[in-house]
Length: 115
Image (cartoon, rainbow, N blue to C red; front, side, top):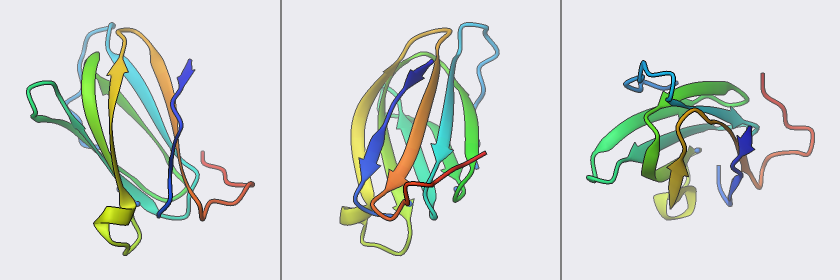
């Protein structure tokens, strides 16, 4: 299992992905350790929104993605300016792999946990 960790200096709801049926799909656990909700948009290489995930506070959401390269835009949903609460970065997911992506903010305590 691979872990992706992205910290945000801000605070950011449940996924509605088009789930691939192939056994070669990529599995991504979005583990929210923060007291706020997050919105994560996965944009594919053709610049189309491929997946949208809403992760509630202190919850875990699992996605099945088509493997490949994406641009991820994560936004902390905590009434902060978008310039502070949004981060964008590239990510590449390999077929058949499982990734764990902890979502944390500067407001997340050291005892943060999610199911």
